[in-house]
Length: 157
Length: 287
Image 1 (cartoon, each protein chain N blue to C red):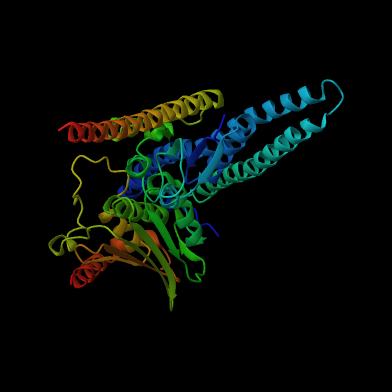
Image 2 (image 1 turned 30 degrees about the vertical axis):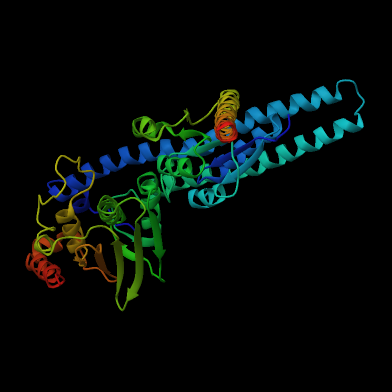
């Protein structure tokens, strides 16, 4: 374990962010960032590196789907999870495909399930990150090879 | 000071029947809203209960050999921190549920159909609580002034608040706001409900209080309709009118007198021209 994973929790109800924080801090070693404002959370994403975002659906400033779509723009590799009350379920499910979310959880949530979803989300994000850095490494190796080839051709011309 | 005279019973009174119909619809909304509202504190307590059990299990494990190793102290401190957080959340959750029950009780108390000296702020707050779920995507601004108690039928007046607030909600896109202002103006009180919606086209402004007027096809009417709202207000010897600039929202203004005519329930039948006067007023607001 070289790096502490970070989970961002966004819900306009401090009860929810605090309950999730208590659970995650007791049972995992994740760093937990809790926000009751979607806008503040988006601001934080400009500087914070986050592995998984768990966001409520019904929020006053913007709904969870809008928030998670905006979060994708600044952190495309982060796994995004929607947490919904049952009353919003239909709307939420319809919007999930549109926003390309990783998972959706219903309130009241089950802690073990939540932990599993977050753990898998972290794994997924780190795989994407690894893929991303491997692709970048391949690209730079390719560029390097290209340069070597050009130099070789010039040398033997 | 209730006056439950037989005339208040509402027999042969179409308005009372429609108020009752609307109250049933309100009850449905109340239940739906309550189910959703209670889900948040319930979810928090449900999770916390589970975390407390886990915390206890961890503490029992640490204490099992009856010796707390120095390295285990950090773990104990972590558990204590988690339990502390949990207790604070549970305080909030219990407080929220207490508030929900209190709103319900309040709603039940003011549910009588008789005349009472009502605290309009209480009525507005109670109505907002019922609509909390509906109103969540928009912000509600309260600019309450000092109001004396108002002689009225709280059940009916709250139904007017409910209707005006639902109209405002439906007119306001998510992210918008509704502002509720109250003030005493001489021997009357004024309640204004403004929204940041699309507004009412000037051609429609004069017609919105007409019976059966609607711009929402196929919507299940949970309210009374503005025509009935105005009838209720007229019966109280008050006034209800609307002003709007298209694109800049609408404002509904309600005046209720602090001194009621002796039998408010008969006012409409005795002075039909009152309705006419109010209509003219609404039209004069079309600017």
